[in-house]
Amino acid sequence: MHGVNEDVPLLDDLLPWSVAPLRLGRAWVVAPDERTLRARWDTLVRADGDEREALFRPTRARTPRSAVAALPGQRTGTGRFAREDGACPRPVRLAHGPFDEQWLLPDHRLIDVARPELWRVADGRQLFAVEQGYVPRAPGPALLVTAALPDGRSPAGRPGRIRPLYRRPGGREPNVAPGLLALLRKRYGHEVAAGDLLAWALAAARPSPAGCRVPLPADPGVWAGGVALGRRMAGVQLRGGQGGERPRLPGGRRPYVRAALPARPGPFSYDPGEETLHIGAGRIAPVPAGAWEYHVGGVRVLELWFERRTAAAEPGTLEAIGPTDWPQEWTSELLELITVLALLAELDRERPELTGVPLVGRAELGEAGVLPVPGAARRPASVLDHPEEGPEGQFALL
Image (cartoon, rainbow, N blue to C red; front, side, top):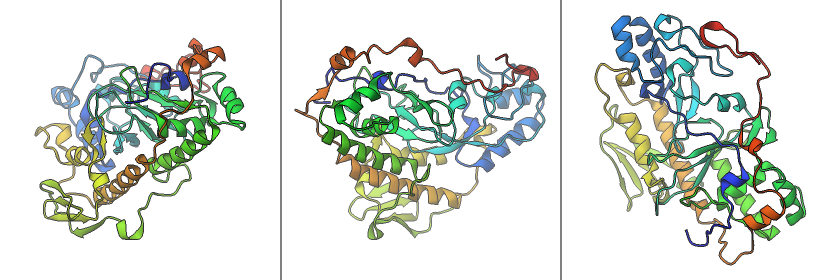
């Protein structure tokens, strides 16, 4: 992107602790609704021997005989899954790629690489900055934010990074390069919090082959405007979470169901002239063109969301277990997603133009001792303040 050069710091310089995306290993552990996950679990635990093995879909990392510790904060079994006959664990919210909140079975025995360090710091005060994988010349934001545990997956299949805003539960110890907030406070003449830095990054981040770059303005007025915009972006993306208001379009622009969606929706298409989304015989309008055209990683968000709920699965697999008819709650979620994307498309047009604006570059960060970031800041903090159950019921040593 124009105006981005190697002296512009990477997000990796500013929020240094990051975690790679989750590797689920099997698609059936995620679903758009809780009922589906409970039905899949019940089917699996009723199966025996070879049938359970086939339904489970073993990988090198997980089989029904794997011995695995519990996920932090989750009350799930740690005995080998081949012997499991209990009730389904309570599903948890998962940000399954951009703007798609689904549900996950939080059982470590079912997930190839669950990143326990993320689960240790996930709570009601945590936010996760999700850096999108770089796709050359692809439209869409370089950085998103979510309060739900993210899987970190990019719709284009490129690896990104997950960066918690805080290194410890309870909103403690910001995941910010040591000395950076003090430097910015001196530059701008007022306190700068970790949330301000994240808001600025949402508004100003630029994609690059080396990773997400975040220009830091020298001018306090430019900074204040970008932080205000980023907070509005975050409020829309969080959808009313953490005490915010649910996003809403102005009265005459709110999407409504104009013709009921069929029980089994057919083709998914958009009429730009009528601003109408067609789902088989169903119609939703108005749908602003900005919502329809919203892309992340080069992929249209609305189409991906719909495909994930309607794509055919292989018969006889756990993935094939799901609603037979289109649930009403999916329609409500679709209306909210349209609203979110329409509002973000409008906010994207307000992103700060930084061409010719004096910046705080990597050289200045180096002179101030912010760079290079100490190795300890790139590693997770030790937050084991309570026992965690290991394989076969053994407790982990602290």
